[in-house]
Amino acid sequence: MQTTVLVIGGGATGVGVARDLALRGVEVALVDRGRLAAGTTGRSHGVLHSGARYAEADADDAAACLAENRILRGIATACIEETGGYFLQLDDDDPDYFERKRAACEGVGMSVETLSGAECRERVPAAAEAVERALAVPDAVVSPSRLVVANAAAAREAGATIHQRAPVEDIHVAEGTVAGVDIGGNLDTTIRADAVVNATGPWAGRCAALAGVSVPMRPTRGVMVGVSNPGVDAVLNRCRPPADGDIVVPRGDEAVLGTTSVAVDDPDDFERSEAEVERTVAECAAMVPGADRPVRRTYWGVRPLYAPDEADDARAISRNFALLDHGDDADGLFTIVGGKLTTYRRMAEATADRVCDRLGVSKPCRTADRPLPGAEDPARLDALVDEFGVDAPAR
Figure (cartoon, helix red, strand yellow):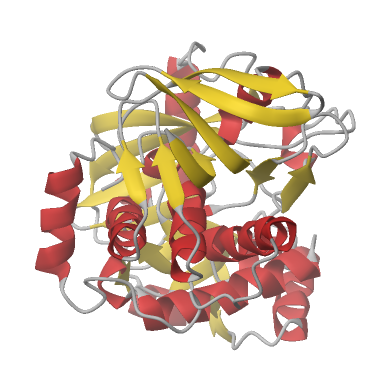
């Protein structure tokens, strides 16, 4: 089988790359070992970040989140629930951190509003009496499954082929250039491509190793805890340095409480600690007392953190993305790692730009202002979720 570009990985970034390249007229095939959105994308808490979470630690990343937040509201309306968000300062939180957060948000051009505890509880009656102040920010909730299938459908409409249950078994490199990729499962063939994009998230290191290339990853697990929604209709964040149990996300009649961050060796085989579930519930209940109720379900995601340097604290590893060109060892192979769901389109654009440079394709990116299929039609998106057979806990 021959194609111009092979994309490995059917999460948000992979389908985003396939869409971007196909819209530029590039022949693309995408393969995933399972179903679309079955990895990190479909196991997130589904927050469309405003950038406020990262503003004081990484202004550039926060600005990128804010820009992509605005773009996605325009091109993927039916994937997004306009909930708004708040950062809550509790009575034992550092007030100086709140001020730094507010200043940093304003510094990247974000529209924010400071509320007293009483004003916050008027808007979010479920918030704790311990809330002294709140910062209103333009967070929202996104459906990872709808977003992925909308991108996959757009890629397919532009000529790309999408292959599920088609795991990569080997990557052949001859004379320093990628020569072919062996695919099992439903395809059971070798694909020859001029460029190969490794968009496999926390499995990126394993995938690259098939080509004899090193990609240092430090994946971390995080638990999401679903409880009956105690009356929360906005994304609630604890206004303190990132820690366990600092976010509550409304998803219909459920609230998703998150999350933890513990390094794992194997993104397929890791401990699922009941203690982390209990800690997450207890910490979130400090913001929303009604969150301390019977657990409906739990699901675990693994973050695709790129870690070329050692870091003692997994939370200290940058949530920005890295685009790696393996031209010195496996010419034609590119790896895109890190990042977050909110910035998937930006990650895909950067990857497609680099691939097009190699291919000599001069057409520009068109994904920022071109609505996704079903952008105004939730029923169509849900039909696509069923068609693709998405099986992800974060629908």
